[in-house]
Image 1 (tube, one colour):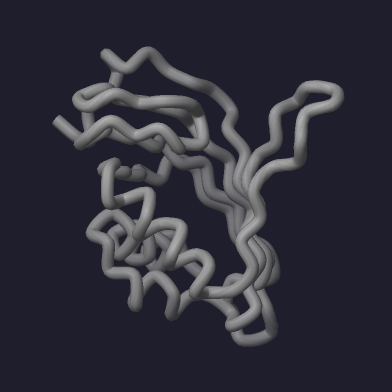
Image 2 (cartoon, one colour):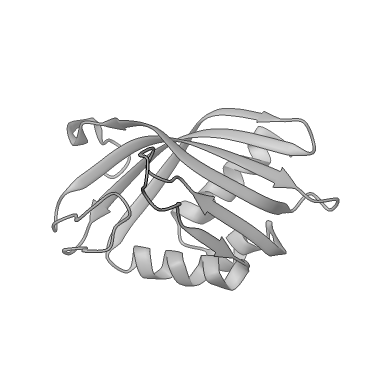
Length: 144
């Protein structure tokens, strides 16, 4: 996959074209989210399969606008690495946001590292998401 092809995927995601997003996924895709780096804390969230991803993101995007911008990209044909500037804007109070409660009008901005393992057809088989840095919400610019 090229950077340009991945940018199309990001555009589908940013515009909530879930069918197009899911066309990049293997049927049995596994998506793992960061876990708190604290002894005794539970493991991060895991989504198994395309429909679990769709349900999770449709729920998230019902209260929050999420926008990503690709910063760094590496792909060797089997694995893909992306560093994404990610902004979340609460359109209403959101109690179950993964980073904590967001009140209507609040922003959460982070840099995320995402690793994608590709299957033999070039589809995303395994996706692992971790945050690298949380930014001051005044740095939000994609949602403005």
